[in-house]
Image (cartoon, rainbow, N blue to C red; front, side, top):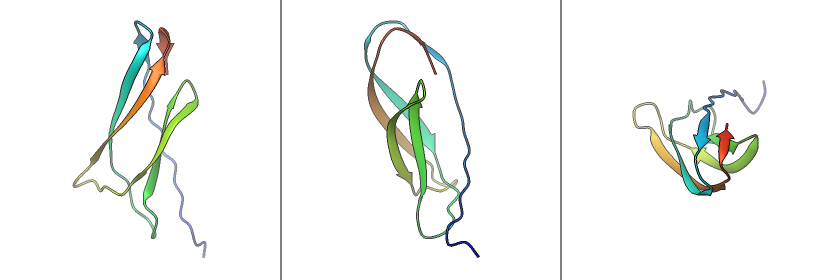
Length: 77
């Protein structure tokens, strides 16, 4: 029996950044907890990691996670 259970779920969005500047990415999330470690979430922009956070929250009480990032204008994913 493995000592770790892993599952990856992805969600993505596209947005047009009108001007260069600092932006706040905000995600509301919960984890499907399996094992002793909390679920983990990675926020990315254009395939680059902005932050990685533990997500101990459950479906009954999701959490809100913010990350500040400096972006150039243009289409971002």
